Length: 94
Length: 231
Image: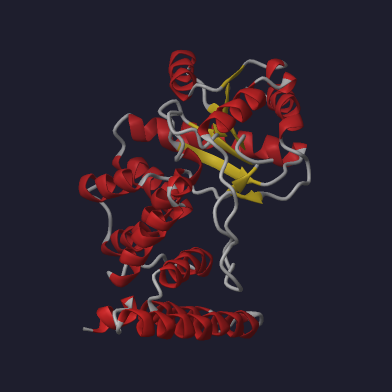
């Protein structure tokens, strides 16, 4: 892919990347040594499924041929001789 | 380029829920370029700007051509480089790292040692990848790693690990484990200007834990985790 192609792809995916934003921790931060984290109410599996479906249904994911299926992504990449651009997101929290 | 969004959902039946941590990431958003086998090629955590993203994509394309294609064609040096690069980045599954140690014959003694030193980090990543299902059970596994001497190398990984070992010690009122983890934190924080403040905070937690353990002793006739450990 030439430089124009990369830029086109980069522009297509940038809306998902919250330009300039800092990353949110998924697990426990590196030096959270001051106090143990407070216990919070865990969402139910039903609530997590609803949050997942809401996330995957967002309009932004319909503006480019995104897949949420890793097996499908690998099969497509093999068939087309391409790499996989992977965007990691989460639905269990905002 | 195939576009794939991986969503960490915490839905128990969803596949590949440990993928983020197995790629060596701990936060969102993160971006990775994978090859067609799903192996890590390049990555970035946090927000991205256009130039940075283009540069990452170009770097990945070059690496795929110069290293991965050769590795897959049987080039031993390329196989070694691809393996070591993923290990160094922490972007390889524990099982694949162990398999690589067994199968890649041309690793030097030094390279082999570096890979072995990274295994505790990969083990921690694997445990943390499913920790949301049962955090106390995950912390107990990390505490077992600590007791067995399998401590992640590198200040960031070690501190993340030790903070969870402290939580396990508190949950079990295990003063001895807490003190051992604190001693390790003190060694790690020696050159850190913020270290003293952090250690003071942990020492306060230790005092509270000792009080709680004493209380438990009084109630149960001396059967705290700390005492059992020392027997």
